[in-house]
Length: 379
Ligand SMILES: *Cc1c(COP(=O)(O)O)cnc(C)c1O
Image (cartoon, rainbow, N blue to C red; front, side, top):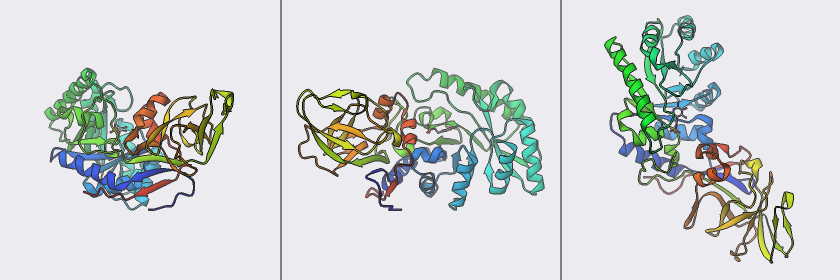
């Protein structure tokens, strides 16, 4: 696990914090509420296998991913927990689901029949979930046809209806009106299923925002991805005391230069020194997933903020360290995370990149080695 960084730029994953975050979440969640940990896109850049292992160890009921490759990587790592595949599956993928015990979402009779044929050929009975589209117009059966379709799917031999789910379009902002409309639509489908005496073991609707702010939508299980990573999806959603970001992104000062008045910095000559300045060159850029900016954003050196100057390149970023005279070559630099009293959050970088924190976390390229740190924060 303790891969030494070969490059003076890396993503640090603090497993002690991850474990602590899971412990805090499990300590505060309602006892009967199950948790599915979403580890898609390499657990938002943190490494799907270690995050999945900790999730299961801490008591997660299941794991969620989006691609079959993501699911197979977990199986190859020896993870035996139930894996729910979110989204749509091709016929070829359904075959792999049967072989590797992956649970698909199905909402069309033809897909269910195809899955059932594969299960019959393998002489097994397999669970599936049905997604109900309650207002996101993405995957699933439209809520108006939900109950009737689910009734048909539940009757297909060799298949067991294990779950019915939906997904919020906006659950983490103060205005919950659309989320409540979606909840109302989902509840109507569930009530119709109850009238048909159809038992649904796992009803689930909430992502992190819903889990935090909409307890009335918890049902039997919640699907959280970003929460155990210690990052909140919005400024306004509820906070869980003690949750801390698991990821930090670091580099080292690769070069220090003295600028004379009139000196230019970087491509496009976007910065001109007005007076003597001291700058540091950092060996990272947009080729690592760092946002491409001009004279915008900051990094942390010696626990102080140092502003980015000029336009950063694919492999280099220049920062002004005139105010940090003790900074020297190969000193540690934090691009994302805490150093001393200051923190540069994924949300702060998201603003600079005009995107969401999910995109920032998942956007750090594999070119940056992942260094796993056990940490001292084991509960
Ligand atoms: C990604 C995803 C989640 C997890 O969302 P978070 O906000 O990271 O908790 C839950 N459900 C579905 C369907 C998803 O695609």
